[in-house]
Length: 257
Image 1 (cartoon, rainbow, N blue to C red):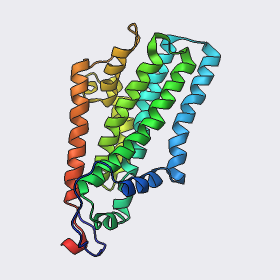
Image 2 (image 1 turned 45 degrees about the horizontal axis):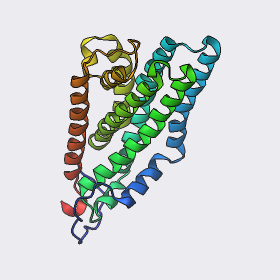
Image 3 (image 1 turned 180 degrees about the vertical axis):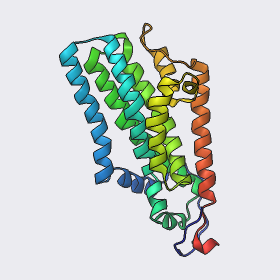
Image 4 (image 1 turned 90 degrees about the vertical axis):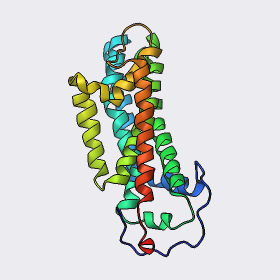
């Protein structure tokens, strides 16, 4: 992948690696919380809360209903969609419009750029996923069977993985949003819930394994064992971040060609 805009090559050497660069972080937050993306980020949790208030009013507190709704909408739909918005939005627009070349021309290590954007994407995804899920769980059944906490932790863990995966998509393809939506809506929501073999490769099922451990009773279940789920979450996230960094390092400025 290469850019076409001609940008003066920075003469200053890149600074040493830092996990977070304040300027890059601030620019990324602004990009993610801009008007259009902010509307989408707020709309999904708001829709969840509206649904759970209606369900609680109609059916009362019910542990099974709470679990079904938190898994069926929050974990399998809202969390991956928020991940798509935050993960791809952290870097894909800059690559698409060529603005990334101005950032890459600065004396900042590309690994620092990736880690900063990842941390921002993770923070935004967790904030707009785990917190609404926790509130929804308390509204539905007052955290009976520890369901609210279990699904909130699962949403937070899944958010970290989704942010890593979708950030990688933002680096490697100009169709990152489309690819992310296909993964979130087709693989996680449909295939991952219907095809038994595919569930092993589902972030949702990995997160459910953690929720199952935290929740009480047998209401929450996962097709993946806890040790396997933790290993797959760590490996998938680490590989996604590593590959995103590798691809960004091969992104050439016009002045470097």
